Every structure is written in C-alpha cells, then in structure tokens.
Amino acid sequence: MSMKNMFATAMLLVASQVYVCAQATLTMSDFEIMPGESKTVTIDMTNSLPIRAFQVQVVFPEGVTMASRPTVVPDREGSYEDEFGETVQCTKTLGYNKWEDGSYMITVNADDAIPFSGTEGPVITFKVKAAADAALGETSITLQDMELVYEDGYTYVRPESTTCKVTVYHKHTPGEDGICTSCSEPVELVIDDTKRLDFQPEYTTYAKMTYNRKIAEGTKYATLTLPFAPDAASCAVYAFYTLTSVNGDCIYFDEVETPVANTPYLYCVRDGQVEGAITGDITAPTTELVETQAGGWSFVGSLTNQVIDCASEITNNNVYHYAYYAPDNVWNRVLKSLTVIPYRAFLKQNANVQTARMRIFIGDATGIHEVPAAEIDGLCPEVIYDLQGRVISHPVKGQIYLIGGEKRIYR
Image (cartoon, rainbow, N blue to C red):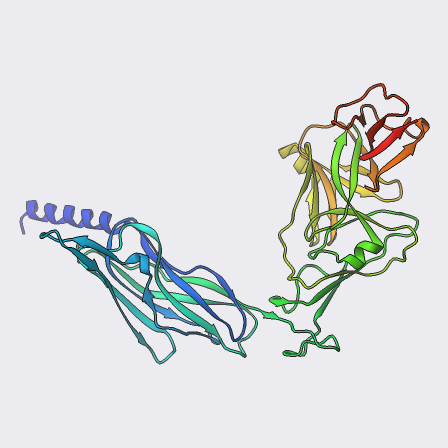
C-alpha cells in the first residue's frame, strides 16, 4: 500500500472513530416494587445520531422477573410518504430470547426510512414482577452486551453495562395484636434520640410511628424534627411552633395547627397535659428535610448525628450557626463546633451579623390578648407592627397591633 493510500486509510479510521464517539447507550430508571406486584418499566435510549438497530441483554436479580412480552413503545413507531405520494407505516421489529439464567436478549431493527432519531426517551416497554417471597431491600437490573448500530448500518457503538436500582419494599397490614398479618413483624416503629434514621427493615412501610423523648426538667421548650407527621392525639398534648420572623436580636415563633414531617419546630407540653410519646398516623418514613426561612435566617432540622465546623463556615461561607439553650430560652451563636443529635434543629444566618444571642418570643395563635405596656418594655426596638405589617414606633393605647406574632391590644 502506498504512503498516500495508507494516510487516506488512517484518516478514514480517524473519521470513523470520531463518528463512533457520538455516545449512545440504553438505560433504565430506578423503581420501587412490592412483593407480588407487577410494574411497567421502560428501557430508554440516549443517542445523538439516528440508530438503525440495537441489542441488549437484560439480567434480572433473584426474585424479580420479566412479566410481559417486550414491545417497542408506541410513539417510536412512525410513517413516511413514499415516492408515489402514499403513506407507508413504519415499524420497528423486535425479537427476544430467554436464556437459561432467566435473562433476556432483546434485538430491535428499524425500517430504513425511519430509524431511532437522535434523542432521549423510552424505546422498549415491558412489565416486571417481584415474587411473593422476594427479599426486601435494594437490588438491580443490569443491561449488558449492548450494541447500537448507526444509520449507515455499519458503524456501531458498544457502551458499558448500565444498571437500574430496584427497591423491594413491604407495606404492613396491621392485625389486632399490632403485628403484621402477612410478615409477623411489628407494625409500629419506635424511635428515640439514640436511634438514627436507619429504619429496619429499611424498605418497610410502617402502619404507625412513635417518638419517645422527655423535655429537660426545668425547661419548657425544645427543638424537634421528625420523619413523620404528628397525629391529632399528639397535637392535643403538644404545641408545635415554626419560625416566622426575625427583628434585631429577637426571633419569633408561631404555633402551627398541623405539623408536618421532616420540618423543624420548637415544641412544648400544653398546659394541663402530661408528657408522653409523639405518635404518627399511617405513613412511610422519608428523609427529605425542609428548611423554614425568615429573612436571612434558616431553621434547619436533623435526622442524624452531625458535627458542623462553625469556625470554617464563618471563615469560608460567612454563615453563623446558633444552638438553642433551653434554660434561658435563647439561641446562642456557636463559633467553633456544633454537635447536632438526631431529631433536633438549629439556626443559621447567611449574613455577617454581630448578634451573639437571639431572644425568643412565641405566639400561641389563640387570638387577641390584652397586654399591659409594661410587658412590652423588654422587647427589642421595632417589634410592634400594625395589622398591615408596618412597624409602629409610637403605639396608641387601645389599638390592636401585631406583637410577638400575636394580635394584641396595646394598654
């Protein structure tokens, strides 16, 4: 071969490699399934160039199987107009074989006129089923031995194997004895300050959840974040307060009627009630935390043990953290290290503030109260608002104002 021909061949190979480098692959999205349940899933294609044909081996984990014939998704079919002006329906031909290990080899060929155009989306759909005795927990389906042929029919790509996470979970059916009628496990999950958010079995939907904790003796309030919503019985015993506003070195919390999961609160035992367990209705525990914000302040919950390097946060991010001090009912700024245990909450301020301590004012959301002027003397400046939210510097006796998050009559 002449040097000229060798160079031309080399350039052709380089061009072909560039063409092949256009990434194409097949994937499946993660999903959850219960034992005995069937669920429709898809295999998705990601391709920047049109694909003429492809193959893939689908490998299932123990306890999970294919439960229906795989087909090409309907919107991947199409039609085109031939040289005589007639509409011709374009189809994608799919074939599959089951192997001895329970996996399936799927092959798909497209009409020359309409290949799989460069796009992202589902190309194959089928049902999967979890066996009645499938083990709870996380497993995976693997897509391997993939080969995707481009529109020219010669150039192809063989991507690496991909996996999708399959979570097998179980929903308890409570019996009269509080035991699940199908798996004989307790339907109530009891947690306390010593138990982090690592529920066992991890993928079980509990019928009831209970949190045990006692507010420190001699104090009234404490912070709380739970992975479930307290039920009506708990709300009758406890009052839950959310962050509403900050003014100077004063921070305000107002009572909420219906507390929700994964949200930080101050809470206390209502007058005349006896402290006990906090319970939640039928629910699935989740870990998506919600931050409550007011101005530049954030009220942040925690479901696990964590240590915050406050000194580094101040230096690098200009963020200050505050820890609740129950005996004095204040928030103290932490300058070194803040250790947060499960089911607690802390404050952070995303600005350069000089306040070292935040005083707390709590509204019980029960209406209008008469408040003598003497009770307002201790508040920080500019904390009295009219009903339109405007700051009042010189309140008038007998008028109704917003003071400490409540509607009050100034006396």
